[in-house]
Image (cartoon, rainbow over all chains, first blue to last red):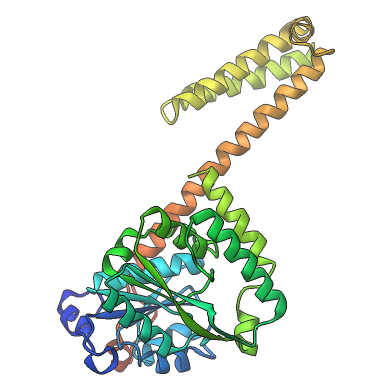
Length: 247
Length: 121
């Protein structure tokens, strides 16, 4: 078997894709996925408009997610045990960095993000030379969002602004773009869902230059069923405080 | 009395185990040795408990022993909790290293191989 980190493949895989990212240095998409067999092929097909360098981290799915991702042309790292989305992101970031990524975009597997938004974020990162570009559904559009979800996210955003000092308008949005240096500085230790707050906290702590751009998030029947339950907000708060206690 | 013999021999066993394990963590084994020695003293001279209890403002010796038991149990749980977190981080690192070492490329499917990676020999 030929492994992705075989140095002989490095050049080929990390070559900039002129067609999709207009000559911007090598861009890698990191997509954490757990049991996304129904949608992963479609998500990857459209994500190729951002970059052909895609790594899907299969978080020990029990369905064919990994196989389908590989067939759709992505690199696949498979966790031997289920670790959670935060851990999957970190694994994907490590893989992309090893492949020589200059820009790393985190993207959700369930198809709620728009490739056009991701492309714009890569361009923004490149033009402004900043460390991080964050997406905000509240600067853009949140299609099909429920009132309760909107309220909880607003509260979470307010809380994040208070604790991190970042002037963000959204939180727990899986769409982000990092420069190589920012991605290297970041170490996600929150294996489960609290990683999203952890990333924002790290941006504040490491004093990374960030900008926030509008994005559109489409809530479908699938993404709602698959995504976070709103009671997750409480679990995330608990995780964050435990981590602070036992650092 | 039978109960004194039972309790003190169990505590003596705990003491001996802590002594034998002191290389793993000196502070923890010293703490366990001190606690078991203290326990033996209280078992052999129960009247000491009452005197100590009165000295610190607790009415009965048995209450003081109970309060100490709660504190010791909480400390033990806290210690286990810390270890569990450390173990989880180690497992994460291990699983990540495995996932990265066995990452597969799109070419692997063309050759008809399964994406389920095999550890290199």
